[in-house]
Length: 464
Image (cartoon, rainbow, N blue to C red; front, side, top):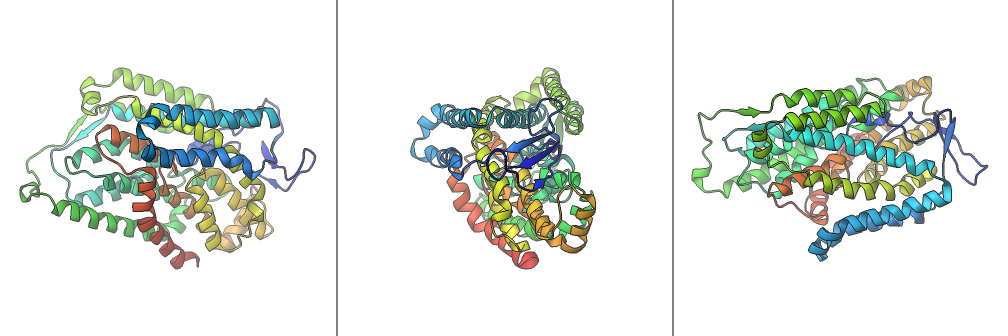
């Protein structure tokens, strides 16, 4: 079922852009790309992107500003009322679309949200029953290696799976010296940059695979770019952690010896594998399997493991509410991008890198990737969804796809809402007693001085 981009009124259609049968919130696991984008009746041949104005994205901007500023200006009020703000703005956009364009587009967004929160929630519940622990303190070198291992793992189980599985052990091994920057760099590496080597790592790469990009293409063509981004981020982390480590009393520098690695709840790995396998199923089978696996995992989880992990449902409730508002309010921004991506004057690999990345910092990177890939193909007179055209594109213009892929995956680390697991990691850390940076603090203290120079280096080396 193709989606037809409508440029003007009800009777005017622009060029056809082929989308996979569905895609969900970019920034989670690749197989969410199989979520049907529209809750369309059976037999419907196509759907139409409504001719939405850029002004319709104002509620999304307002929600971003609320998430960024209100915790600083009115923390207690925000803690009590953030559900009203998020759901109120979301309901406003939902009502506007419902009255102006009918129910189909927003029902599709609700379906995407349901799939997104089902995956995030099921992985959160299952990982809560897995307790990994060692009494050794993590030295700066050990922490850096752990983040590197997490980056590799994100290519096998997705950025969401790796984040949910590893964040609690990472917090514990660094107690009591853990600081906010530990969580931030975990988000940088494990929840985002790490997952750029396989279609299993991040949804945009999976969408490319569905549209004719060979499965091993990202590994063969992105690994130098991946390494150029990952290595300096890990180096900066090591220096920061080294300084933090040096501030500790000397008796805390000696790693304990003779301690054992402890694992409780190993049986929950079975349910974790079931959830990861289920992402390749279709809706609603996928969600039914995930919910059943999560319920069974929680029912049979060892109480000692849940207690040791300080497991509560508070983090997932917070994420569910905020992302419900985000999913509703970002629809006009995504639709406007779908209508105008080929009119933005972006014509070089470097321009595609920055444009895809900038929008992927705050929007769903799956449709952002597809729209810019479609625009890049269009520059060469080619069409997305045509296997022969994709082969020709890869043969002669692969730098465009490298730029779009790297921008979509890497820039999700730029904000707490840039990727599905980001906010979940922050919420888990805060409920574990870690003081994390605010939304603006994250961007000002880490994104701008750390990530942007790294991404500029990537641009200079590969896309300039």
